[in-house]
Length: 296
Image 1 (tube, rainbow, N blue to C red):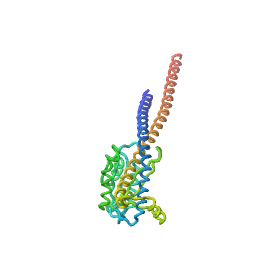
Image 2: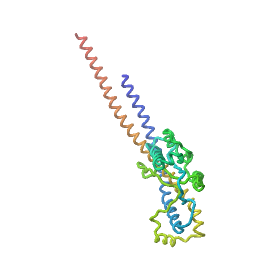
Image 3: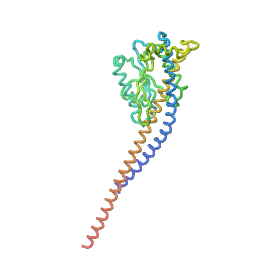
Image 4: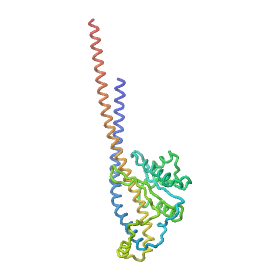
């Protein structure tokens, strides 16, 4: 009977866990819908804004702007965007591993010299890096607590200033791009300096760009206002992509955990029924054996 009691206790425990994982799955699904709507609305705006910037820059190919400054790499910043909460599978591990790979392989010499700084947005990615003795220069976890464009502006401006003041010669982002609830694409991209794709720089396209837009009051004025706006939009889009990916990863992870709990409960119930049947059979055998002994 003690064995049966242990199985019943395990069934109750797994049942409680199933209720928790199922509730977390439902909460993540609700948050995912909101985050998904936000990133779907942001993508066309960010894309068109970036296209306008590229065309304006092509109209003035010799215009020197601070955000297009390609310098000798002396110091690089990697911004790793993860999550503040766990239970979302390999979501945080993937971005942290990518940061380690980029720092140690792509910038191996600079990393040995201590010229690679890592900033973490998300406690779990920071925990992973620190557990493997990688130094995290700074953290910006508050950005994920109440994600909004206004709240992120101050930090984005700090990034822009750190590049223009030559504190860093390159700033790169590592995050998950949202595809669907089950798939997140690990993304590594250069945030600064900006660059114009070479296949956009044909004479025909430059001429087309010059005739497509009437710029007032001037191209210089527009570029000075447009470039910071594009960069701020791109960074905020990366935050939204990561947030939607986080909820999708957590929903998928909790769905799998719920299914595993249900399967385990079925196995435990089968095991319980077999043990109970065996116990009853043994009792019957003992009763019959006792009765036969009394007859003798």
